[in-house]
Image (cartoon, rainbow, N blue to C red; front, side, top):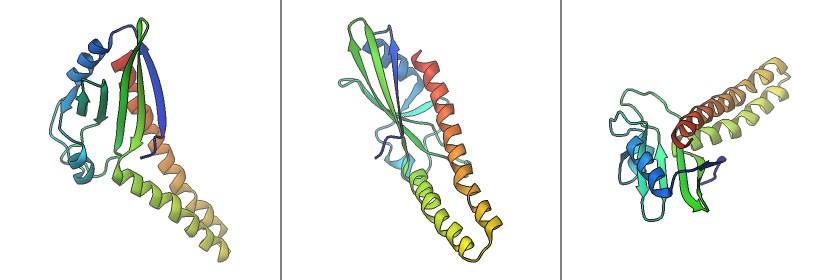
Length: 157
């Protein structure tokens, strides 16, 4: 899948300490297949669900999805930790979950068709209103990314 954003954090902690710190905030599951395709996750009080590969210092995270949540923007976070010199470097990549990716593609591919059909019919105000849907969706996605970014800032810095 396509990575939408990459963030690199630096820390004075060792890889082992960062993995331990990460393990305290992650509800361990074997795979993200069920949460991504069923849009449900195990009930937890932790900030993240996912799995950590201790041997390779890699992790895959996702925010938990509640039972009564109608629609969530699934963002999958994949990252790895490298120890260089006296600092650890955490590289984090943001990717969209399947539902969010398909919904985004639908919005960004169908909106130009709708706008074009309004322009052909000389309904310029309606065509302008058709631009609002992708703009609003982009703003919602960027808001979600900022929220996740703040949570990761608190975790790694």
